[in-house]
Image 1 (cartoon, rainbow, N blue to C red):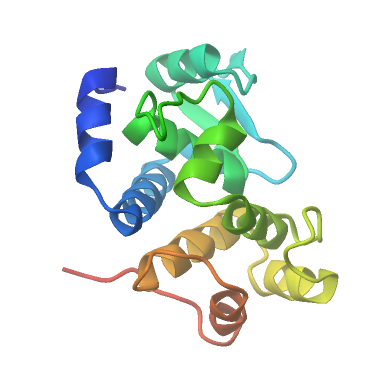
Image 2 (cartoon, rainbow, N blue to C red):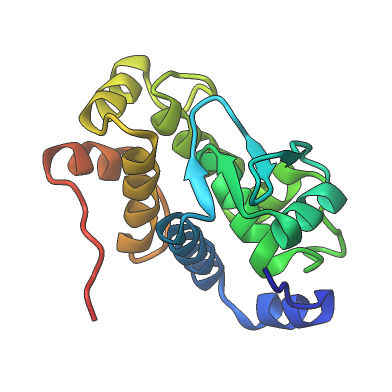
Length: 185
């Protein structure tokens, strides 16, 4: 997979609004999921695999993730993992207040905020891991979408459907009642 240079990603990042950044990441994650490069998997942050099925890397450090994105045939990841990897694909190296992001949570927090990233993870895993989604709501979302792929897809679509590119508890409850569909051109 071809990654842009840090300079190109910095320029992209600086030219975008916060909403555009969040939607760009969600769009990329959805495209990677659709293409089979990201495989939604509960209980795994990111785990890179070669075409032969060998594990390449499973570390959240920047250098191993960039290497994994370039070399891996697929990556198993959770909701936070998908958001992180797509953020890395789009923006790693882009400074916010003069900082770079050597760790996943720094980059996720800069683009989505800790609360939104934690909410996505609670819904994806079906438990109140991060304290953002009450256990019964997390379980209801989990039960409504029985596969990891369905849950991740609904989370990403909820981010894209919101005018501000955010994930909310009400959007997750709404998806249970009426699952979101991708917009067709």
